[in-house]
Length: 311
Image (cartoon, rainbow, N blue to C red; front, side, top):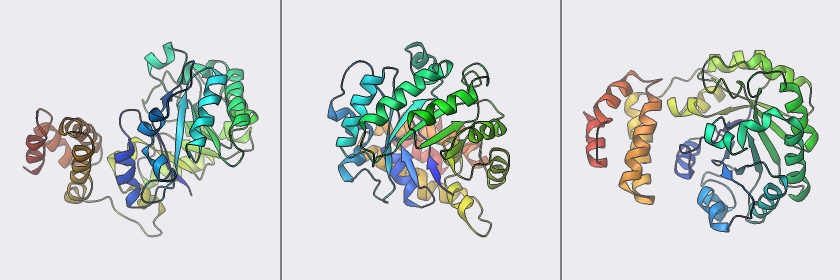
């Protein structure tokens, strides 16, 4: 089983990637998307989204980090993919799944699911220019408004030269609302000959087994679930049943170190905002987080926030 850490814009940055990969269980990460329009991007943009490029393209724990690009113009996506590869990216991921209205209005992300030939053209252009030793992967959804083009979407990515296809098991219009349609991934998987990674609503070992049964996928990508239960990757890979971390462990080993790193590397204000963000995700798994979020959500300083967490 391969477990990838799915990118989440404005959530999973290099600080969180480092913390989440340190404990093991995660095999690959992808950056937040880098928006490509009609020009080559300066190197500092790639390094801002993927500072791991300064260290061989891996987290300190040795987990490879792929650079994700989002856009609609094949020539400029190819040009920027080539530059990312020159800077040391270990893989290039192409985002055809972002459901954000602002992104879609500007002809990016999931809007391309309406026209599979455009997906083919983008993947093909990037694959042709990026060295063969560097994987080019694609992230898609089941479709835009419905699933009618799901097979064509998968075939477009595979025929364009993608080495792996990650499928979020919802349409763009479904956003993140349950349920995830794992059975639909199976139809896409049967139409292509490249590995398919399942994504969406895998919150527990039981969910993983059911997703595997319905989709046929052994490999998965986790986003929100790993924020709600930080040791979920290890739980999924453990031979014997492994319980979620206790709340005191989450605070001591995950949330507090994360706040410290954010404050040290960026600012107290950044740490406060990201701390509230992660605490909200933890409320799905931990009743204690519900109480902590109620206490701490109105904190205006990092010191106040951490003191309310300890109450």
